[in-house]
Length: 213
Image (cartoon, rainbow, N blue to C red; front, side, top):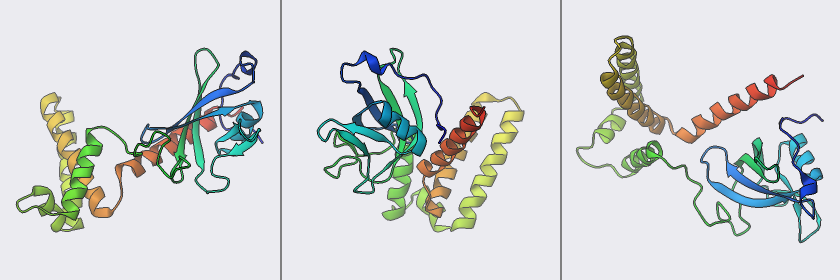
């Protein structure tokens, strides 16, 4: 089967044991999930199947992450470092990554960082624990049609300010649009991370098509 991923071949001969350190990072949250090792066969199997496969130093054999637990790592991209002796695998995990049951091997929650995610968490808190006088709660309690209407209104405002070349107003209207879009996500029980995953899958599919001979 042809590889889905196109990049230079790592310098396996540089390592005395032929094993390349491989860092796995969540393709959506960008959290570092685990560290493993790949030899030529493990990398080839990963490229062919799309599932992260490593060489187990303790068992002295190839193993696909999640082969017994089902907590697989679906690979989105593979990057080779500047010295060609380590790999960065971007993947979407299907469940906890660490054998202890933790999200990551560093006992961290696999949550995205950044203010938009913090704001999304706050909106979710308001949804679960309403606060009297909260605009977010007022909007959520008004129902899905109202939340959707507000997104439409803010989108129109963004277009108007963009065409008017008024940067300060465009920034403010864009902020309003993003906030109301997050409220709509909460009303529809979808997350910002799920939207990111759709974009990443499209990006990966585009790259695969571009790399086809």
